[in-house]
Amino acid sequence: MSSIIKEKIDVANQMIDERLGNVNIPNGLVESLNSAGFTIEIILNSRPSDIAKVLGIDEYVANIIYQETKYYYHNEWNEEILNGYTITLVVIIGDNLFVKICYS
Image 1 (tube, one colour):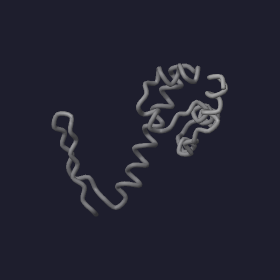
Image 2 (cartoon, rainbow, N blue to C red; image 1 turned 45 degrees about the vertical axis):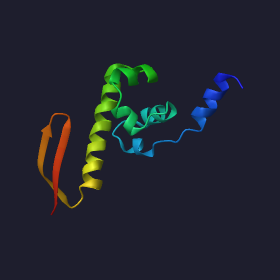
Image 3 (tube, one colour; image 1 turned 180 degrees about the vertical axis):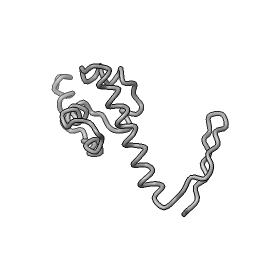
């Protein structure tokens, strides 16, 4: 099997990150991100310039994708993980983040 066909099959078999549909970006961009194999985590671990290169879009638009994904991710984390809890203390020591969470 040629590598081009194999790559197309691999892309066709990729899971779609349905959470991208909740990010405040146009549906066409969501489809492009899913087609390119992006997930929320991949976007957050990428630079906007890398997203722009992969999708063939302007870096300004890629920065919007990154910022909106970041906003969605942090809001979802707060709603799902911290529902009913309050962060009372955050301490950063070196590369370590310590968080005290209390149930409210």
